[in-house]
Every structure is written in C-alpha cells, then in structure tokens.
Amino acid sequence: MWNIYKEDQGKVIRILLVTVIMLGAVFALQQLHGYLGSNSGDSRNLPGLIDVFGRIFGFIDWRYIVHGPLILLAAMFAYRQFNRPKTADFLIETENELKNKVTWPSRKEEVNASIVVIVTVLILSVFIFGVDYVWKLFSDGLFYSS
Image (tube, rainbow, N blue to C red; front, side):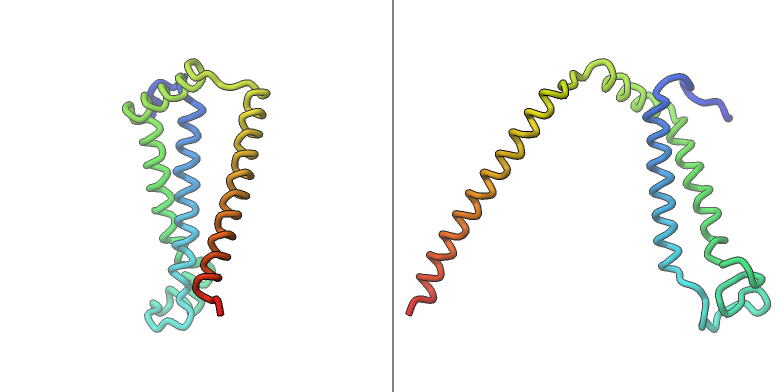
C-alpha cells in the first residue's frame, strides 16, 4: 500500500505537484477560516462545549476541528496523485522531455530575445499612444468645436 510507483524517476516534478496541491489546500483553508468566522455573539453555541469566543473547551478554536480532516484529505489526494501510475508516468515523461529533448537557448540568446521583446513593446506603446492622442484630438475637434 505504501510502495511508491517508480520511486527513482521523476522525483522533482512529482514533489512539485504535491507541493502545489498542498499550498493550494493551505490557501483554501486559510480562506475558509476567515469565511467561517468565530462564534462570538452567536446564539447557536453548544452550552459547555463552545464558548462565546468560538473556542472548544475554552482553548481550541472550533474552526481548526474543521481544518484537520480537510488538510488530511488534501494530503491523501496529493499522495494519490504522486503515486497514481497514469499521473506519475505523465510527470516522469514530462520531466525527461524537459531534460533531454528540449533545446534551451543560451544566456546570450535569451538576453537578445528579451531585448527585442522590450524594444518592440516600447515602440508599439508609443505608436498606440500617438494614434490614441490623434484620435482624441480629432474627436474633440469634431464633437466639441465651437
């Protein structure tokens, strides 16, 4: 049951998948925590169990009782995705392709390509600003002339 499918392959991308799933779960639980709010001022408190501040037995916030099973479910889902043959094979193939088949540009090529993109964006920005300004002058003269 606890055997890891193809344990020695695709470790980096599989760990990245589990990390993304767990970070998503933590973010979702943090949002849920704020959405649930505490029970302060709520008349539905269980007498003797949840106090007016939303704490169970006076020291545990009841929302953490909800979070425990949900984070456990997220961890089980992440482990299942980590160990599921179909997903694991896909991630292993993806990592191998990125390492062995993709031709990555050199640093010089990347810098040159980035400069071309930045210059092109600046030129187009100036052109669009100019056309917009000319159209504004034209429309002001057409509609607001005295």
